[in-house]
Image (cartoon, rainbow, N blue to C red; front, side):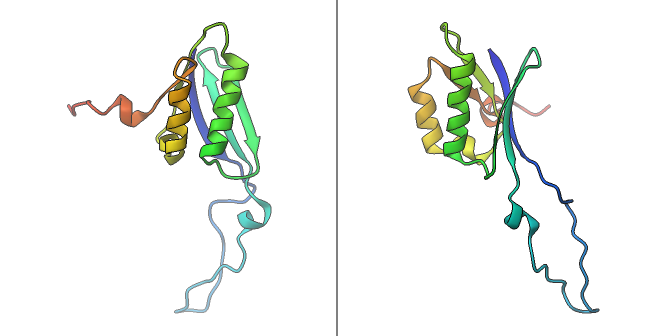
Length: 125
């Protein structure tokens, strides 16, 4: 089964912040809303039929949380000798040593594809 995977943060505030400072002085933001409320993060995967699988959490995605998501994918979709092929973006967590070791130990169940691996030998033009 082929899956496309990505992670995203969900926030209530906008990307820009309005501020004020007297002429010639740099505005200083006193409070960051994200540090107070946290931004929920969703790790998701979608298959070719359009079915989505996701895991929601309150903290940023790290290698351990990414492994947890992959483990859940294997439990939910793997089995019956079916191997999962997961196409990931090029986020740092996908290249972490602990993630690579975890995947190597489960080579019969899951295989990730990263853009750097897919296009390493591509020639321009």
